[in-house]
Image (cartoon, rainbow, N blue to C red; front, top):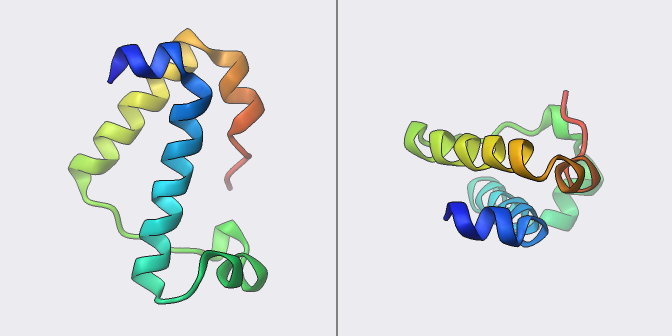
Length: 79
């Protein structure tokens, strides 16, 4: 995963965002587009297991260390 994250950082970031959006959609029972129109990111609450959080944060940390420019371009500010 580390090699993929550093060699194709933009693909990893976009894939993580899509998978998290699918997870939110499955939990809420609504479409992602409908959820985006009715809530702001700070209003959206999702439940992710601790081991999943750890893996996501590990990948993001690697991306920040190795490809900070790609991260800055593709990750939106979260409150």
